Length: 104
Image (cartoon, rainbow, N blue to C red; front, side, top):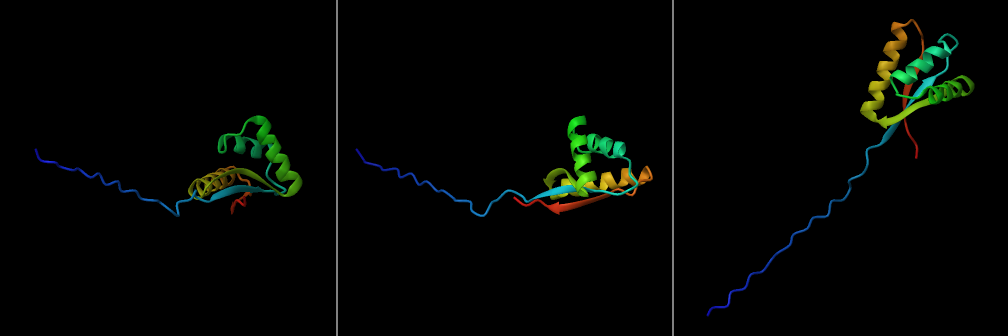
């Protein structure tokens, strides 16, 4: 009889440097022209807030000059900011919407 040996080689790779994508906040800026009700509806339609959450963000915008509508990856944040601006302009409102890097 012949002895045959089988060696099993296990190759593993360590993936390093993979991290979560950075997050960005969509910020609504206060102005003296855009009605509060419009901001609330925008928060509900574009950002899927409940009535209560939308009112809370709207009050934050009104009292502090700006408020966070949501935190997303860059592409999603940019898209939501553009949609919000387009809807505001279509309805004749100068509402400002910006995208900022979310600090942890």
